[in-house]
Length: 261
Ligand code: 48H
Image 1 (cartoon, rainbow, N blue to C red):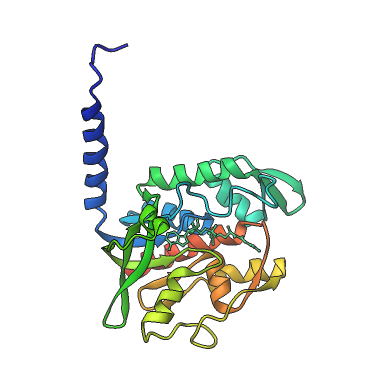
Image 2: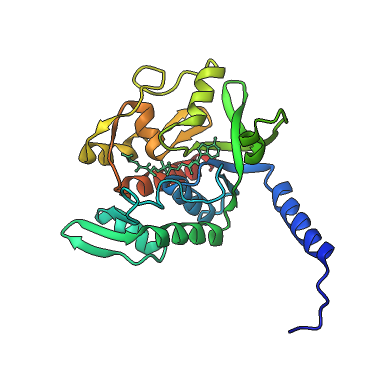
């Protein structure tokens, strides 16, 4: 035991000051990612690795989105060969189940993604709900953030704003950010109809193949990744196979990095 006398207020100061320093330094970003599932976390890992100032905002207490429960709560995920390579890149143990099918522990998968993104320099904020976007001259240029506890309690408390050169909607099936843009702006979306089309039923091969293809700058300044990308375009769901989500996050990160110059 050290000789330091534990002081309760010093513990409070350590938390408040450290958090505020990180938050203050995150008010002007290269990229704001909304949603901490596989696609958002992979985008955060790649963007931070490429030296981009990146923050990820997740509504829930736990980061990881739909990874935790694998399929029907059995905590195993499946990937194909390309996904396996990305998993191994972040230090995850992957096992071959059958030719072309690989499995990993879903809990370790979440841990590996969070660690990779954090160590690369991405800031990860949990309990942070993005309730709106900031739009100027037809371009999405930031996110509007509230504390999730305020949202859950339904309190009338105003949010704060964070500027970002690019925003990524990684909110999964509900595509929350795209809905805000559709409801509140005149910006047409780069979908077949100019509007959100909506997700189609299960077709794993087509669904998986289309996730990276549907990962695009869907409105100026706004990328869509992961399940939200398929839902926006009217593409199929694919069930608990996660390679497409990882490839989607990496694709968006690489494209944004190029566009930032
Ligand atoms: C802050 C928010 C907000 C908000 C939502 O659902 P996710 O895991 O998303 P993806 O696209 O990375 O992965 C999809 C995958 O998990 C999945 O569902 C698959 C493969 N389904 C196939 C099938 O057939 O069903 O993560 C999204 C995250 C969640 O953690 C939300 O809490 C969070 O985004 N989120 N965070 N502000 N407004 N909206």
